[in-house]
Structures are given as structure tokens and as C-alpha cells.
Length: 215
Ligand code: DX5
Ligand code: ZN
Image (cartoon, rainbow, N blue to C red; front, side, top):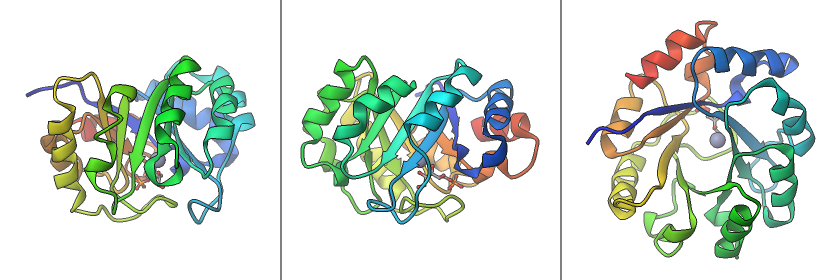
């Protein structure tokens, strides 16, 4: 089955001293989403950025901000990320005792609700919230850092989730170690959104790198 492939460059691999310019460049290079990794030094062993920086970047592009929250708790901050200009807000299954409620809150804020699974979390963790999500994000590395190697066991999980999704309008996104070798396997298993940090920012040919991932 053919589906639209979307490329979401992760700005974690961008030059943070020139973040606005980097986002403008990936926009012009033809990306679909801007993937923004938010880390709290608690849920994951790294710290990145929060709502004020997202708000200041909002005027740089019209492309959807795909905000990946690797924070625990996430619920107290959902409104702030919505106000900052997130279009998709993704929370982690493992970081939320009240996932069902968080997803409802995200939608009530007028945003698309995403849910993410760490590599060790089974696909079944999302089977009872499918009516409340717009996007499922499969982590194909342990979250925290860019530039890690793709964990092959996640291909089966992508395939299981694609089957579980059926004809629901839910996007299936993969994040971590996505490159020219692993992207085709993710797409074949049923993913339709590819997050890529290193593979997009590895050189200045962002347009070429994005087109190559699209296949
Ligand atoms: C990891 C982040 C990813 C990461 C991807 O915790 O969620 O978005 O930046 O980077 P690459 O594509 O280099 O693995
Ligand atoms: Zn991410």
C-alpha cells in the first residue's frame, strides 16, 4: 500500500547557535514537519529546550511543529507547549500514569495528540487509546541523544502497530537512527513519518538528504 511519506528533521542535530536559520533551511529544503525534542534530564539523561524557545522559533516557519516531549511529568506543561506553537504534542507512555487524560487534554487544546513508545515498550501499550491519538511515535533508539544506532527489533513493532491502526487516520512515526539503510525498512513495515537528525544535518545539502530519505 502506498502512503504519503513525511520527513521530520530533528533539530537536536542542528547548530543551536543558529537555530532560526537552520529551521528556515530545512523548511526550504522540503521537510514536512519540524521535529523538536524536549528533554528534562529526568525522564531522559539530557536537557534541551522548552516553551520559550519554541515560541521564539514559531515565526520562522509555517511548517508544523512536531513536539516530542521526553519529560515526566508532561501533563502540567501541555498548555504551555500548545501556547508556544506546537502543532503535534507527543507524550511518552512510560512517563504518564494518566495517558488517556493527557491525550484528551492535548486535543482539547486544539492540537494533534501523539503517543511515543520506548524500545522496550510493547505495541499493546497503546491498544486502548487508539481513539484518542493522531500519531504514534516508535522510538528506535533509547531516547536522549541523536546519532545512535537503530534498534532492529523495532521493525516488528512498527508492523504490529500498522496492523493495529487499521484504517484509522493515525500517523506512524519512527525516531532514532533513521538513515538511508534503515528508512526503507521502516517504510516497508508501515511507517509514514520519518524523524531524522544526523541523516539530515550530516552536511549542508539538506534538500538532497531529505529527498534521499523519501526514497
Ligand atoms: C532522541 C530523539 C531523536 C534524535 C534523532 O531522543 O528523540 O529525535 O534526535 O536523532 P538521529 O536521527 O541522529 O538518531
Ligand atoms: Zn524525537
